[in-house]
Structures are given as C-alpha cells and as structure tokens.
Length: 183
Length: 442
Image (cartoon, rainbow over all chains, first blue to last red; front, side, top):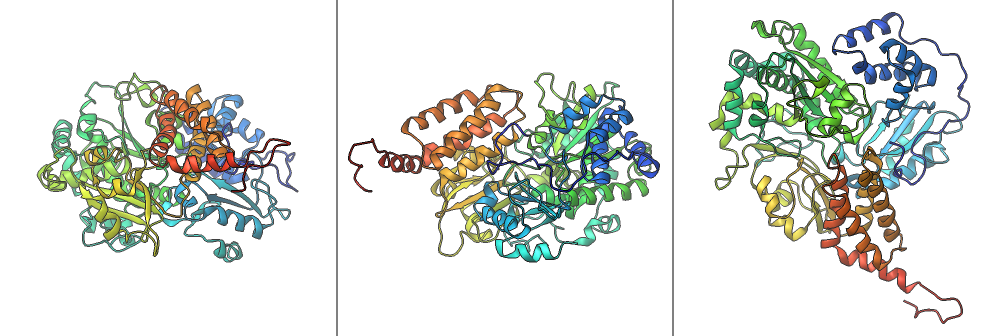
C-alpha cells in the first residue's frame, strides 16, 4: 500500500521507466483462449466481482502491467465500474500501475533478512543492473529493482523474487551470476 | 526426509515427513504414502463425529491465534445455507515460512485436509487463498487440485460418495493484511483487503455473507492424520503436564542461526535444546542476543528468557510472549536492536490497510520516531512518546496489525532500553550551542 513509508524511504512503487509506451492502444486481453480461461474461473465463484484478482493477474501476465484501459476491459468483463477496479488495484502491491523492466527484481529486506545482510544485496543489485534508484528502471529497460516486505522465505535469506521466480540465499557476491543467468 | 536439512533425530516429522521428496507431490506418490485414505473415511462419517474427534484431539489453530479447531468447526450447523471453507495460505508473518513448504512439497496433503475440513463444516466449496508472491506453491497446489478432480476425489461425486466437494485455489496480490481472516474474505470477494468489524463473526456471516470457517494451511494438513490415527494417537505429542497444547508443530527458524529452516517437534519441546541442538546455535564466534519466537507480532525475548521457555501455547505465555505462527527470528550480538525494531515498525507501517486512524497514523509515527533514534537524532522524550503511541495503538482497532506494530516497540524498550538510551545519549553529546564551547569531545 502506498500510503505508508516504503522500505527504503524512497519510491517503492515502480515509476514510469524510459522508453516505454504509455499511449499505445489497448489490445483486448479477454478474447479467445484467455476469455475461455476467465469463464472457467468465473464458474468458481457465486458472483463475477470475486474473479477480479484473477482477472487482473491475467491482464498483467498478458501486458506486463495494469493500464487504465486494461482496468476498463476488466471492469466490463466483470460488470463492475472502472473506478471500483482501480480502487482494488491500488490496494495491492503486486499489480504494476506503470510498465516495469523486463526483469522485475524484488529484494526482501524485512527484519529476518535484514539481520542476514539484505541491504547489501539491494546495493549489489542496484550497482550491477545500472538502475539509478529503487523503483527506477535501468536505461536499457531490462531491470527494475525494489525492496519488498517479507517474501515468506526467511530461512533462505536473502530471497529475491525475479518476475515469478524466487532465488534463495542470495549474497551481494552472487548477484552478477544471477543476472547473467537471466534469459 | 526433511528440507532443507534431513530431519533431526529429535524431530517428530508428521507433517514434514515428505518435505524434500518430489514423489510425494504427485497423486500416485501421495496415494502410495497413504494419502486420501483419511478423506475417504471422513466422507463416510457424520460431520459432527469429525468435529468431536478433532475437539477431542486437542488440535488448535496453527496460524497464530491457537483457537481450538474442533470448536471452531462446531459453530457450523446444517442450516441449509451454503457454507464455505477458506484455507489461509497467505503466510506473510515475518519469520514464518512453514506453509510454503507444506504447499510446495506435499500439496495433496493440503488438498486432502481442505476437502476433509469442508465436509466437516457442511461446505461444498472451499477456497485455498495463497499469497501472490508464492508462485511455486500456487502452481503445486493448483496441479494437485487438477489431479484430484481428474481422479474423482473432488467434484460432484467426491470419492464416489455422492457428496460434492469443490476446492479452488485463489491467488492474492501482495498485502500482508490479507492473512487476517476477514481481510482475506474481502480479498477473495474481489475487494480491497480491509479487515471487517466483528461481529458478525465468519461462522455467522463470512465469505459472500454465508457461514464460513477459516483455517491455516498447517492446521488443515494435520487433520487427516488425526482422522486416520485417532485422537489418542495425537495426544501422545505434547508434554505430560500440559493437556492444553497437543500435537506436533512446524517451527520456521531464521536470522542469525547456524541451520535455518523448518523443524517439526512435539509441542512443549525445550526451546534451549531446540535452538542449540536442532538448529545448531549461533554462528561461530557469536552469541544469541534476542529471539522473537512466534513471528514478528509477538514480544521479543532476551536470550535468557528464550533459553528457559517451552515451545507450546502456555509455555510461551509463561515466558512473556506467544507461540504465534512458530516463526523463530534469532538476533545475535552483532545486531542493533533499535535498528531492527525500527525495521519491523516500517514493515507494519507499509502494510497497514489504513482504515483505522490509530494504526494508519500510529504505525507511520512510530516508524519516524524509531528511525530518528536509530539515526542518532532521538531525544529522551521520544521513549515516552513511543510508549504513549503504543498504548493508543493497542486494543483499539478493527484488527491487531496496530497492536502488532506496538509489540516489538514495547517489549524492545523494556528489554533493550539501554540500546535506545545509548543512541540518545550519543545524540546529546553532539549538541552544540553557537558561541559556546563545544561539549567535551566524546
């Protein structure tokens, strides 16, 4: 949630990066197989609104982020208002309200990881990705680095989530190898 | 087996027996290990009988609150309304990572427990809510559900009994507060994850306004073992002089410790032996300074307090803290407690849903004061202010996130006050008045 202080004291919500296209027309997501998938999900709930989080995930998986036009499409599909959808989107930290780098890197710095040196892992990621600051995408559009609150993998400090995948027991020294293995 | 370490001889692996065993993830592998026998037995049993069995076993909620599971289930009556079971897999309490291992190593154990729980509360539909970050556990549980449907274990005619049991998985999207049961229900309904005012309690009006039960992943995974082996079998786990804490419990251990990971022991296990024998004690050359034994929301213990504690609900209360989720966070003698408590309050400030003013303002204000003390800018008055804010944050809000933020501050100030005072004293020695001679160089 964006009202509180972020982990770093800096921006935790990813800011618009360089070279992305905010103004491209929105290609509908819920067509063909994706629409069929949404219908399957809708059958799990007694009302359409309950499929909002899953529908937003499908939108973000398809487009990389959740745009205003995308929210309008979700709203129409679930017969709720775009304003309602936006209200929900802004509550959750995982829906990107701006485009982010190809690799979205979330480093856990909450206490259990913090006592194991997580802040040095963050510094190492910033240094090796060329990201100027937390939440800013690197000039080549490849990386966005943020601090994240507890990833629930505290015994494997420091866990880092890169897009969907966890990388466990990351140290400042292992960051260059992890980045070189991304493809 | 055990993961990430082989099970220690003093562990009691019941839930964790197949951690690290990839074959246990598949339906065939799970059945070969006795899986779904308990569900088959339960579906042929009257729900009240199952409720009574679970009551008799002494099983209490493993998510943190420790509410007796059988009693919670007995609130659900056959009233003709649709009922729902929610499984709380939102595991987000700092220091806790046990449900993640259950879901990614033994997803069928969870699906079986959920289907069994649904039957026991007269529900035909259950949802497993998994935090958004847990993509691997989500995929494992979703695959297990697909396999269970294909095999006729779930669906309109579950295990050929003519009973309908549907289990669905639902993915969160990043919000600690959705682990609070009423926030979880709101999130499942496609809403912002704000906790709801109780009453009405979920058993009366919960998910979609219908009678609902919410149980933690570990709790539901324990139930098939009780159905299969009986309440008497389950009662063997626990210390003889405390019938209130029964069973085995997963403890997640992290921070400055030699062998971090998950350990399953019978409740009542001595905490000192746990920390030093099972977990290997502190890192070489270091000493344990403090321990948070039950996830970040419970009071901090000094090393001496921790070493005297017993690992069950009452034992931890006697030590001045709580068993909580079983997330054990260890701090060694290198750690600056002011810095780490400040980091915890920042966590709560970030995760406050902001609907109650005491929490919205209190978590942020506490964090600002903690961080200025951390940075050498604090004053002696700040300590009283922190305690006063903490008092105003406790017991006054819709949910306990606010209390949870106050807890490490209050217990930290009580037990590590000298560290706060040292930082403040350092600040005062730096104060200079223009024109006056500088305070003696410290």
